[in-house]
Image (cartoon, rainbow, N blue to C red; front, top):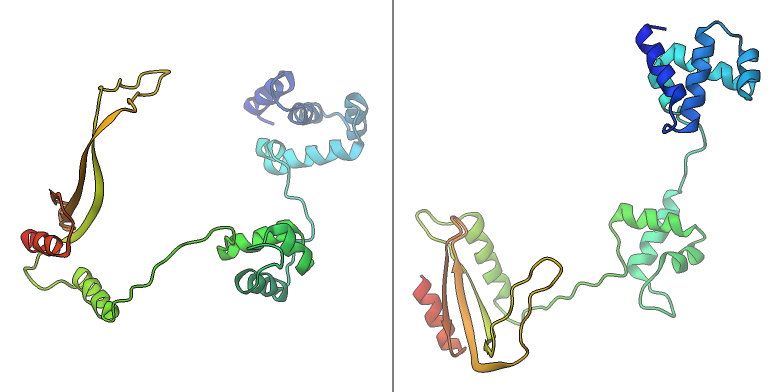
Length: 237
C-alpha cells in the first residue's frame, strides 16, 4: 500500500458522511495493511472472517476502486420466450379486451400469463403505446396521390433555378381589442388580461415560407374564399 492510498483509507475510516459499508471496508484494508490476520480483523470489527478476506483480496486485485463498488452479482438473466413476445405484441396490436378500449399492462398480463413489468418491457422495446391514439383524415381528392408525389418531388429534387414556397393559411382568427391594457408578469405574479373586449370581426392569415432561407411572406384578408386563396397563392409566386 502506498502512502497516498493509506492517507485516503484513513480519511475514509474517519469519515462521518461516507456510506457505512465504505468506512468498514477502509478499516478492513488498513488493518490488513498492518499485517493483521483475517480472524483478528473480523473479531475487531464484528464481521465474518470471509468478509475480511473478501475485501483484503479486492484491494490487492483492484486497489481503491475495488472497495468503492460492489462486484457484479451473478444470477439467472431474465428470459422471455420469443413466442410469448409475439403473443403480447399480437394481442396489443390486433385485439382489444372485452371490457375496455385498449389493453393495460395488468389486463394483458392476466391474459398472457406474464407479469405486468414484462408486458411493459415488451411494449417499450417495440415502441407500443396502446393508450395513445393518433387521429388522421383521408383526402377525398381523386388526384391526391398524384399531387402528393409532385409536392414531395418538388422538395426533394426541385428544378434548377426554381423557388419553392411552403404556403398555408389560418382562417377565422378573431380580431379582439381588449378594453384595458393588461399588466406584465413579474416575479410571483402572472400577467393579467381583462375579460372585456371589443370584436372587430375575423381575419384570415395567408403565409408562404421559403424553406431555403426561412423568409416568410404574409398577408391578412377579411374574407376566406377559394378565389381569394388562389389570388394569394399567385401573388406569392
